[in-house]
Image (cartoon, rainbow, N blue to C red; front, side, top):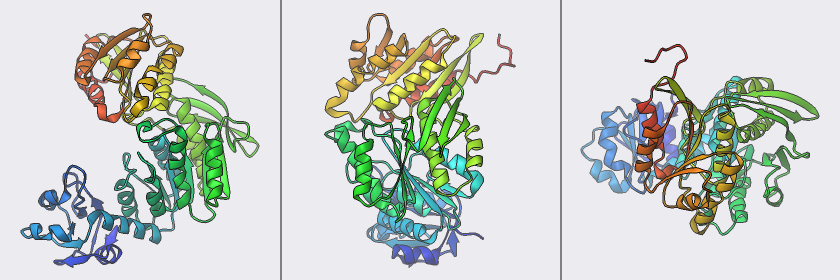
Amino acid sequence: MSWLWTSEDMVAAMAGRPFGTLPEGITGISIDSRSIAPGEAFFAIKGDRVDGHDYASMAMANGAALLVVSEARLPAMGRLTIPMIVVEDVLDALARLGVAARQRTAAKIIAVTGSVGKTTTKEMLRHVLSPSGKVHASVASFNNHWGVPLTLARMPRDTDFGVFEIGMNHPGEIRPLVKMVLPHVAIITTIAPAHLGNFKSIKEIAAAKAEIFEGLVPGGHVILNRDNDQFNFLDRSAQAVGVENIHTFGQHAKADFRLAEFNGSEENSALWLTLGGETVEIVLGAPGRHIAENALAVLGAVTLVGANLDEAIAALATLKAEKGRGKRHKLAIGHGQFTLIDESYNANPASMRAAIALLAAASEGRSRRIAVLGDMLEMGEYAQKVHADLAGPLLTAGIEHVWLAGPEMAALRDSLPDSVHVEYREKTEDLAAFVLNSVAPGDVLMVKSSLGTGFGKIVAALLDKFPAFSDTEPYS
């Protein structure tokens, strides 16, 4: 049996205390009692809303091999007949195990942060590195104080490439995480006004992202967006903490990984990358200039960790957009079909503009281009302005149908001229009902909002009501 961890190594790494007869090892790690697989260890983490200790019996029933529990909650576990490792604090123990996982591997490690595009870039790296070796990367957007140590602790010893997404909502959050990850290569996709309510300025956001430089291994590499307004600040910040290898990507003439030309369509993209004086044509399986730009950073990282560049370029052709991040659905309606672009995972001003550009490019020859937009959260005192400012990109893109929900989107409603057909509802549920009854054959809908607004329900409702469209199936 190939164990992810032996119980002996877990106890040593976490400074834990065995309780009962531990199994020889575990096959995986879970913090969710509902989805735990037989043979895995269940870490009873106490979160903001729920305490994992309350679900220990469910984890046992679903096949957990052992539990990791806190000393303080051990008396409440007395009736459970399952081996345990007892620690002072479960989240701290998970972090210790993550640090041990990083210490035992010879993998090349890449860390990704940025205001926009972290998860897409992480998934792109997972995809293009796979032909070169065994890749371990975080699932979903596990990029916070529990997601990063969990991803580390799940990393097998024989990993060739580790890819970690590191996020933040406040200053000081990236620093401790990157010092666990210790990347060989750190990518900052871009700096944009995200989480503005927690920062005084865009410069403060850049400074928080720059914390990623502090965990770089000696001799490590940084990849920065040369086109971003905060490039000079980030460049100086990297040098200030002793980073010597700073690389750049973008359209800028001085970029090391330069976008020489871009040709986008509604399903994919073609781009030309200039690298070391040579220009290479690349086919990208997902649409959008913003994804093409991040592909430059990805290929830069591929070269820096010694993976096969030709195989990585070939893999980009089979890349597909992820759920909530530009995934497209062709859905049947009446005697025709409409296109749904699912951008419902999250939103800030920069990603909104990118999604609006996607909608504009995707709708040539179609009857209506419809932006279905909800509030961008965590904008603080800037909320009214950043929502109103979306009127410009929508008008430039020629979007004539805008369907809105949320209190902050009232500012955009009031900023759009009469030439735009606007539908506004205060609640997401009310807009969902309108969308389901108003979509028509030939439409292209792009759904975009911050995750907390529940706009994913609009996407789910559309997918539930309308079947996938097939060119070969007759409709009556």
